Structures are given as C-alpha cells and as structure tokens.
Image 1 (cartoon, rainbow, N blue to C red):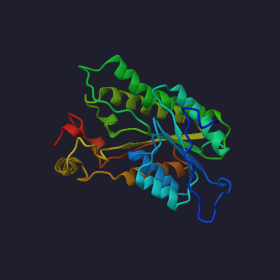
Image 2: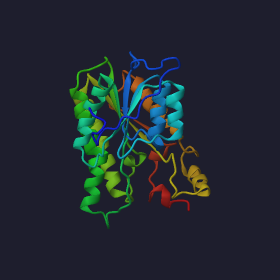
Image 3: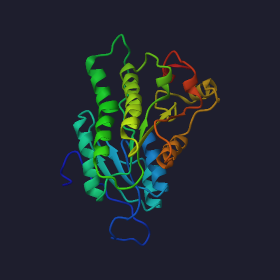
Length: 278
C-alpha cells in the first residue's frame, strides 16, 4: 500500500537497541488501537507497548503522538506504524484491518475501538446530522472494524476486541445526546458480537468515568467532582489502560464491561460532569 493513500500514513517504528535496520520484530502480538495517538487512546497504546506488543496506531486526521506515548514506544523498542482513516466515512474503517495486515504481514490479534466523536447537543436541539455523525464514528466504524477483524485468518489462538464505552450508559442524562446514544449502541454491539464471534474471538468493553479533563474544567471543579464520586477519587488513565490490558490477556473472559469510574456508574447525575460543581 502506497504512502500516498490518503487513508494510510506510515510514521516509522521505534527499534530495540542494537536492532538497527533489522526486519520487523517477530513473534510479538499485534494490537490495533483506534484513536491511539492522543489522550486516553495514547495511554492505552503506551500500556500495550510496555507489555511488548507491536502496535498499529490509528488517528482520524493525523497520527501525531502525545509525547508520553512517543517516549514509551522509544523506550520499549516497539514495532509500530501509524494509520489515518476518517471514520465519518465508516467504509474507511472496514478497510483499515486489511491495511494493517498488509503492512505488518499479519492481522492484528487485539482490536481496541477507542476512537470517538464527542459533541454538545440535547434533545431540544439535536439534528439528524449530529445523530448520524456520532453514530458513524462511535458505532458504525467499530461494527465494520469488528466485521473485518473477524473475517481475516487468525494469527494467534486468542484474538479479542475491547470497546471503549462510557460510564454514563448506566444512567444516561440529556447532555451530549448524540454521543450518548452512539455509546449505548456500541454497548449493544459488544454483547451481540461477543455472542456471535465466540469461541474464535472474545469481545469485551471498558467504560471509563471522568479521567482526562478538557479545558472546560478548572482545578477547583475537579477537586469537587472527586468528592462527588462514590470512591471520592477520579480514575487515572493508566488504570483504564490496565483494564484494557487485562481484557486482552483474560482468555476466559468475554461479554463483560469493566467500569473504571470510581463508582460513578452507580449514581445518576442530572447533567454531564462539565456542568457540575462549578
């Protein structure tokens, strides 16, 4: 596949000390992490790097790495490549598995559906375009990736998919309606595909709580939100990444959702966290 293809962009690979220009590392499991170049996805990709996986790192428009991920790839001599695919056209997602397999010479053993679109809308102002855009990225693309992942010949005995959900699926509120509906749909895909793909492929999910704040939050608000959680703390991105790794290793586990949210899913909140404790 040529680097001129707009849906694919190789970034190179970190190599082990002394490896020089050697061929790609052999015998390592390969993980594809969508949205894996930044924010929570970058922490998940870094955890796989430290675990010794090779990595296919996807970004919707670019694959510029968060600095901590770039350091983890370098320190661990990780074999990796970057792939660009805009999931607003879900057909690009279905093609991604084949491009990863062609580049690495083998299909991925683990698929982490982490790429997501997050917007601001409520029932009073949501549009058809809002609903379709969020569904395309947050559910249709993972569904087509799952389809393609299941169709390629197995590279290892244990293959698995981990979908990244959201703790709000247990107690939905009206904020970010299109996003919430699409994550509920992804939760349904998790259950359906776990049943349909067993025993060949395990399918599980991780549902994070508030973890990496955006600029919408200030420090005082974050402290008040910590006190609002049942465990009086907020989850750390490394804890969510560890949950994903656990599911990648847990060969007897399928159709499970791990809530890494300090207990937030046990309570209902009237609004999204960004509007609370101001």
